[in-house]
Amino acid sequence: MGRFASTVEFYARYREPYPSTFFQKVAEQIGPRGDETLLDVGCGPGMLAIGFAPFVGSCTGLDPEPLMIAAAKAAAAEAGVALSLIDGRIEEFPMTQTYDVITIGRAHHWLERAPTLAVLERILAHDSGHILICRASSVETPETPWVKPYRKVRSAWASGPAEKHYRVDPSEWFRDSCFSAVGETSVTERSQVTIADLIGRALSRSNTSPEVVAGGQGKFETQIAEALEPFVQDGVLEEQIVARASIFGRLP
Ligand SMILES: C[S@@+](CC[C@H](N)C(=O)[O-])C[C@H]1O[C@@H](n2cnc3c(N)ncnc32)[C@H](O)[C@@H]1O
Image: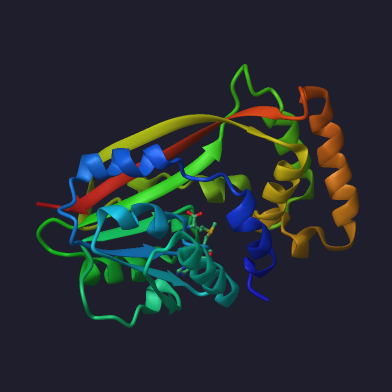
């Protein structure tokens, strides 16, 4: 089983969403004509491809996890978006065509850097291609004091790479490559979540997936609920999601 297989049923429903204003703001920044080809690398259930679809001409998602491909297919059908899907790893990407926009969301830290950079160099459109490294996460603020105790329970159960593996700075990742940063966009959105949502979100993460917490899933869920209960008001917790896109283009 791939490390994301058991997260799939929780991912599309509970993982921090990219706000709709995020897609609008990024589109304003890169100024698409509307006929661009977009490739979403490590598309998961297709959140980025589906969100950017109204701004480009065609979208393709790539992912090596067949259950994620199935989830992306279902999400695209529900959203009424035409999404082509390729089952595979970017390092062995078979297509020879180029793409105007390549998105990589919450995934660049999983990719083998050197072979991925070689593929990106081959498939990014030459004149005005953009690579968007995207992420969205719930941030700790004075209004969201539950974030720290929630993370503490997750860390205690997590298995896999250390936390810093997930925090690879996009500019560092592209250092000494033929790409350089051309901009950055961020959007903050306030919303409300329930304890059940945050349990689902924890299970959507590969380091606290159902496969990882395995026989302890009931205890894991109880510990999350106990950590969050003191912060619940009227059945919900306030949250702030920050979504960011680091935008890269070819070196002049
Ligand atoms: C955390 S999910 C991100 C999903 C989505 N892009 C998002 O922004 O929420 C990471 C995805 O990267 C995929 N992935 C892992 N290694 C990959 C590789 N070498 N090439 C392409 N995708 C990969 C995983 O299967 C998983 O679906």
